[in-house]
Image 1 (tube, each protein chain N blue to C red):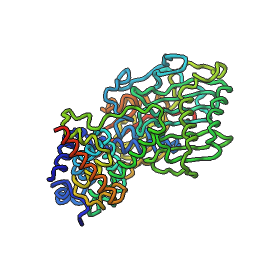
Image 2 (cartoon, each protein chain N blue to C red; image 1 turned 90 degrees about the vertical axis):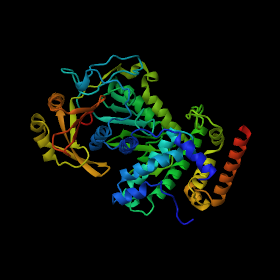
Image 3 (spheres, rainbow over the protein chains, first blue to last red; image 1 turned 90 degrees about the horizontal axis):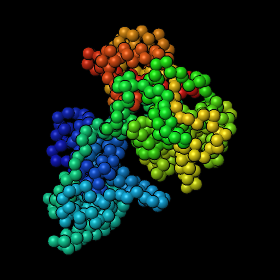
Image 4 (cartoon, chains in turn blue, yellow; image 1 turned 45 degrees about the vertical axis):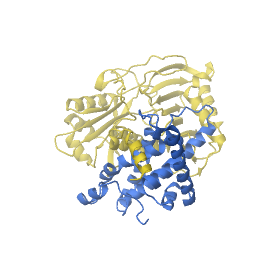
Length: 176
Length: 360
């Protein structure tokens, strides 16, 4: 696939046509909801998703003069968000190792009232599996592109996504 | 749309997008910058920059539900009642010192130790300590509600014991900056060594590198030493002997002077123009004063600000003039105002920061 990323439908492109140069705030308004939803699917937690979203947007804001002029600032945003996600995951692991009595973390997707089978099945996946799934199946990234965003090889992405799909099918199948 | 994508989209849509998301982003941005400045041990002008960020961001943390300081917009606190021998949570100085209240003496002091520990990536829980050669121990904590500035007094022995505790970490043989202190968030220490202060600052992986001369990754022992130091400084009454205390009762810190700083809220407004816009008593008082100029970075570039030292009574005059002119208090815990003159694009932030003994 040549196009590295998909724009949120009818959002940023329209904003660029209406107002050039694109302001950071307009970019935020165009992209934040979609990014947030996808990060929720990855993390299963809205607070975590918002933290990652904020960190990613802040990174872009600091460099907006350059990033705003890019052909695909949205792609840069998602790569940054996934980088933040990876760093946070590493930090959480380190913190857990060090902590004597780690604070309980909420189960993924616990805040969704309606606990349907698919949600329960998604919660069973690891965050990395969900991230691979969001990037490949959810956003049509190639394995190579998803691998660059996640900092792993294309083969690893294929493995993660494949296991994620299999687990989803098994989970949903078992409960239906 | 394939089945998995449909599933992911449906799941994502069930999470509520945060209210005022962009505003929250702006606040996080300014908090992060302020924290970096504070942790880098930058004092003086940067202190005022930090105070201005509080104004610009609407408060040091989300204060929803925070009770207003007693007394409303010009809230003041008097000498506090200590809540226990360890000097635990109490009400320190918030806003202007009460009328007629005696300032902490001596008005000037030599700083021998300052300590800032950010317990989160944001402001919540940030704990600061200032120790002076004359024994004054001044501290505050940004919690909900804000503790205000509180003061206790140590004997010379107590000062030496506290300094020994800090130096025993082995981190102060030279200036240091530790990056990658996972879980410690950020912080900084200055400790006096003869004529100079030795600086130490730290930050986790997301922390941007400062200007420290020696940047290293901390060892687990160094991380543990900082954690222990944080606990010891948070409650010195729990481990210092009785002989270390000249007065262990916790009182509100009484500043002799304040720094008043002003700037355009969203864009640069030059000082002469600001002075034209503020109420006449404020213009009269501020126009003849010496100023220190600084800059803070905003979303649309750097914005200059100017600061002048004023007495507590002059601060009171300024506050009254601002309130009479319709200035709005930004935050109940800090003496900061947003003044919006009639002319568009002229919003001004004005911040009063109590000066500590080493800043006068």
